[in-house]
Length: 232
Image (cartoon, rainbow, N blue to C red; front, side, top):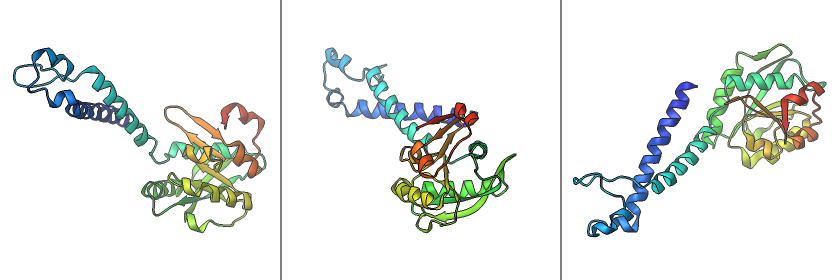
């Protein structure tokens, strides 16, 4: 985690600096700066020395850092589910009234045409191979399932990988039909009402529950669990 944060910080500043140089270079004033009189120098990227090096105006830096932040935000939200995420999901499943107990196979839904989805499916399937959770519920590997071949197994539990936004409606329809359950770390699935549980464990643990998906699948949670979740 420390290495990941340090790496993200380094990328943030590198992206910011490079973008600022581009913003400065593309400025109409900068293009004519060579022939500009000294009085106009304050309106362009001013020189640090006589050798032509330039300082980057604060306005350009702020614009560039904002752009870098948006890029990093996209990168960070694209991370695959971790073992900790799956452990929290296992505990959440254990709080379902009349829900599955013991060893619970999880079908990992993915789209082979979406790289992020395929990569997360491989990672999650590998983590589930040894069983995750313990106690009341242990999530196990139920195999990777292509999105076009959704199983009709009654009470099936699905892990929805990222990048399946175009299929969220079909996923909800299938899980409603079989009285199953959907799990994910992709908040887009929650917002679409297709995933009952979505968890985030970085920087802190957050268990999100879709009221729409829970209602469609008749998922009722123990009252003691209500203080630990956020409904959307």
